[in-house]
Amino acid sequence: MIHTLAVVGFVTLIAASMWLAVYSTRYVPGVVGRLGSAAVYLGSILTPSPEPTLTVVPTPTASSTTISFGEASSSVSTNTSSVTTKTVATPAPAKPVTTTVAAPAPAPLYGSPDLLVNVNAIGYLAIDGQFDSFVESAKVPTNKQPAVKFTVRNIGTNISGTWQISTDPKLAFSQEDQPSLLPKQQRALIVYLDQTSKSTQPLTISIISNSVSESDTTNNSISLTFTLGN
Image (cartoon, rainbow, N blue to C red):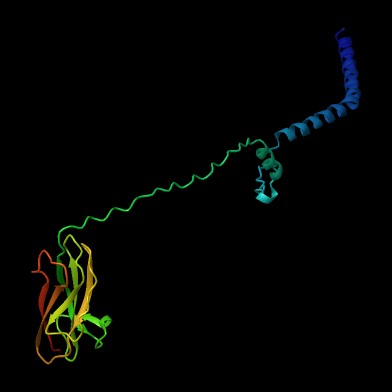
């Protein structure tokens, strides 16, 4: 019996081996193919991703800007049309107001005039006989004509009437009547001497009233002295 079981077992083993051989020949290639595809797919998953690269995008210039805000003309037109205008009448220019101011009445004349003589400057004439060439100087150069500028002022309260200039030494001009002066009015004058060889030359100027008596005659004359020489 043991011998029989051993034979049966050996035959069974051989049969199983033959079946396994046939099965392997038929199915193993497909399984191996499927396993290969799975390995490739898995390999692509495990493949590291490519290194990141930097892409430089040029900054658009003003001329290449594609953002549109609308046409300028239409925008301005729209804004202008939305403005509410109001017409304001310009007031007519005011007419100038003319105010008439009466001139102050002259001070009433009363009392007496008073002529006062004042010396303004001492000097000489740069050109003989020409009053407008007067040069103010404390010393008169040799061969120049001594001259003096002075004023006669009415400091009284009435008109002076005509008056005359008298000098000592006498000047070589005819006595002429000077115009009447109102109160606070004055007259500027120049007189000069002929050339002299003296080192000093005195001069007295006096005012003589022709017809009106003055309130004070002590201020009607003034004396001065020229110093001559270079």
